[in-house]
Image 1 (cartoon, helix red, strand yellow):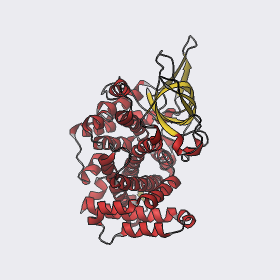
Image 2 (cartoon, rainbow, N blue to C red):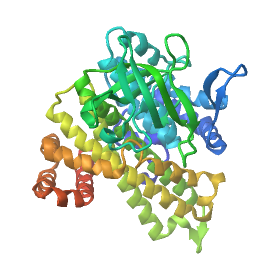
Image 3 (cartoon, rainbow, N blue to C red):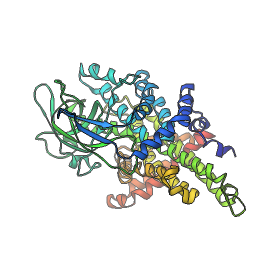
Image 4 (tube, rainbow, N blue to C red):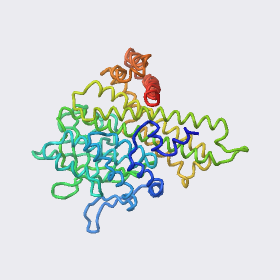
Length: 480
C-alpha cells in the first residue's frame, strides 16, 4: 500500500522524488488540511467575484470583491516567499515546491503566484534604470503589502497567434510608452503591475513588431492606468479573477531591447508553462487521493471498492502515470532554473529546456484532465455533486490544457524547436546517460525528415510519443 500512501499528501509525493520539503512548507500544507480547504471550497461555491467599478462618489475604482478569507489564503504564499525567494536567491525551486503544494488544494491559486513571478523576473532582467528599483522591491514583500503581477497577452481574436492577433498599439511620448487597446483574458486582474504584449505603432503585423511592456495599476498622478470592463465567468479557477481590460492612453515602460520583444514574451510564457505542468501533476495527485478515500470505504458487491482487482490495478496504473508526469514536470523546472536568467542569444541548453517545457505542458495537462475524470467515475454519483468537491477537480483541470498555449500550440512549438534549433539533440545530450538507445534522437530525426505539411499533420502523434518516451527516461533518473 506504500504507493497509495504517497498520494495522501503533496509533501509525501515530493519526498518520494527526493525533493526537500522544508518545515515551513510542511506547516503550509498542514494549514491547508486544517483551514485552507474549507476557505477554498467556499470561494469556489461563491462563483464569479463581483466587480465594484465606482465608489459612492462616482470615481472609477475597479475593485475586485472577495471575502477577507480569500486574501488571507492568497497572502500565505507570498509570506512564504513564493515570489521573493526566487529573485533573492536566484533559485526557482522553492516557487515550484510551494506551487505543487498549493495546486494539490487549489490549482487556481497558483496562478496569481505564477503571473506575479512572471512579472517580477522580466522587471529584474530587463527594466530600464530606475524602473527596476522603483517597482521590483514592492513585489518582493513577504506581507500583505506585497504587490502582485499579471501577464496579459491574449486579445479577442485569440492568444496563440500573437503576431496576428495583438492589436494593442504602443507609441512613445518622450517619457512613457502609451498603450491603447484591450486584453480579453486578463488573469489576476486588479494586480498592481502587469506585463503586456503590444505592437509598436506603424510597424505592421508579425511577431517582430511586438514588445513587452510594464504596465502599472496607477498613473503617476494616482488615477487608474487600466480599466476592468468585466470579470469572466469561468468553468473553474475562481480563486483567480480573470477580466477584460481596456487600455486608454495607458502609461507603460518597455522591457528589454525593442528587437527582442517576442523572445522576452516567450520567456514569460516559459515560466507559466512549467508552473502549469507542476500544477497539473499536483491536481492529478489530488484526484487520485479523492478516489482513494472513497474507494477504501465504499462497499460494492460484497467488499470495499478498492479491494476489487480491477480497481486496485487502475489505482496503481494512475499513480505510475502521475509519477512519470511528475518526472517530466520537475525536470522542466530544474532545467528552467538553469536558464531563466539567460538573455538572447540563448544557449543550446535553453533550447533543450524549451522542448522539454512544451512536452511537459502538453502531456501533464491531459493527464490531469483524464485523472480527474477517472476520479469522478470512482466516486460514481457522489463524484458529480458539487457539495463533495470531486467535480470541481475536473472543472479546474479543464483550464490547464488551454492556459498559456493550447495543446496544438505546444505540439507545433515543440516541432518548431526541433526543426529550427535541433532541440532534440541538445535534450539527448542532457539525458543521454538515461537514454542508451537514443530514443530522443530517433524521434526527433524522424520528425525532421518529414515534409512540412506531413510533419504538421502528424505532429501530435510524434510529440505524444516523445513526451511518453522522455517521461520513461526521466523516471529512471529520479527513482533508479
